[in-house]
Length: 392
Image (cartoon, rainbow, N blue to C red; front, side, top):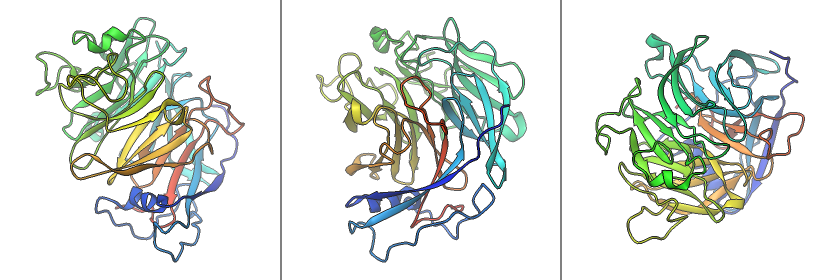
């Protein structure tokens, strides 16, 4: 693997009435209590700004420590953590799987190539996309990947360093709208998000895997309890979902790219129809589920999602920001979403909760639509001034 430029650390300052409350909630909500922060993964304790004496929400400046964990990557798309704390990171265009950490030196976390996945066809929005680690990794050493080929998008399982074994094939593929997020749910089953592959009719076709959220066993079979008999389909009527995440009550949320008007966050219920292409945003005749949140496409276009306590964080591409949405105990939204890192690091692709309680965010400035600088693409680690990054 090519040598990478030195890592750097930076701090970001956010000023807005009410944002301080949201920032504190990101790592402290949901009953978690953090002690003294553990040493930074780069080998030295992070430098935290002095907390303000003014209570959060008072309209004062609130600081966030942002550490650049890795740089010089090529469109990092999926992030999944191994039991030892290392992260597996996919690169969309190069088809590489990287191991980031847990080792470190004075310059940051170690980054090494694990393998290049054969058979991946890139171009446009396709390539090596999502990755998920088996809940039984300690015994089965298995990971799951979502990737594009010349014929389709597919999901495969593999032992790192070995040839992938496809478990689901025939997911529609195109230059755009390939979906691609993978994650194991609280129920132990594997979920995948797919796009309509620019064929809008697929989203309403229950026989097609395009424009859906899928739920399956680790063998790629329909999971018990799926809403449609002998089908992988969990929900339908999606244009292009690239973010899925669960709250602490096992509710599933998804980020969805709109066409020209509205991007969405949806609360996903099994068997429900989210309206595409009949509806973009709210509306319809009662046949479709309205989104929880909508934004104009120029301030959102959110890809990855993570729920941290009561906050849903969405990493946005065109909007070049991290949106923070506070969730209620009933799964609705409280107050107005708050934006973070707006236009500071360019296009943001993925957000993930790390084992130590910090938040990892990847940039996507080399994806053909960004304006990369010499440090791109990067993995950022966020720690908030009034909340530690130690284990909960």
